[in-house]
Length: 361
Ligand code: SF4
Image 1: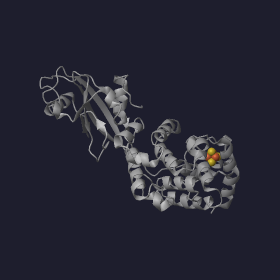
Image 2: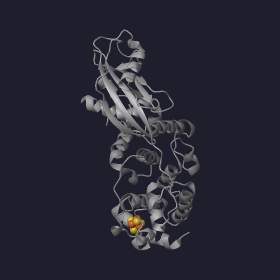
Image 3: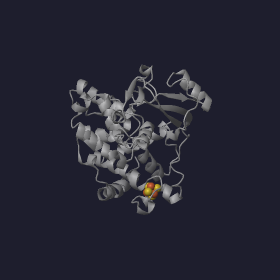
Image 4: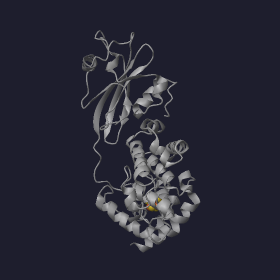
């Protein structure tokens, strides 16, 4: 263990945290259910965006048993606008497991937490330390960043060996202080001070920081590889009947946007010509065979973790109720759509087209 750096952290960062910490509701509770909710919501979501969702979930489901008993669509509806719906799905699955297999009580060990869907080593350590004061360092991207800079390490932070090394060093530090205070301070320090563009001038670790002293704060941390982002092309069709309802379908249980609702759509690895799109629509019998041209689409680019989706949504107004209306899984009004879970890109489209759309986005 690097004792001098630990002492610098203990004497510098812990008091800094006490004076500068943001007052966030999940920091004022030891309830594992509330802490878990906050941790899942804040994965891939900024604090200011996640806060209203945290409050809404606790207001709708004050106990984990209520979340476990809720229909999945209700959970998706509350999640609208956050994206990455796999988190909502895992939240719901974990609540059911806790209700049925753990007697309604949250597991109070790291091993027990790690068995739940959606909980990896970082989230388990965060819940374990915040709720139960278990001394396990919660090592997220913020923590990897400031530790790499403090040590002046150019070991790539996306390699397991680097993560394990930093984890084992911090697991020793956390033994010597209050675990929940340590993890809160370590994460807040990375989020507010040793951020991607660090505020070194305000930093209590400045004189100990190798990266600051060597002028390498812009190049550390290092990553070994860039995530390969693949391009995909999504063509979707808002097909509206004369009653103003539009056709929707539910995605399969597996694959992209599992269990969410979308308009009829085609997902392709290569770009389609206008003619090919029209032919595909006609061959699916989604519209009258007399349709000669598609209207100008609503076009946008939507980023997923490993995918860049080029999205085109075509609005098609049907003059008559189609004879084959049952080809579509369901027709829904704009008001009804606000009750269902749609992928974020569809929510954004609905909000743009229909001011009365009641999604949360
Ligand atoms: S001196 Fe700068 S780079 Fe070093 S730990 Fe502090 S904020 Fe991060």
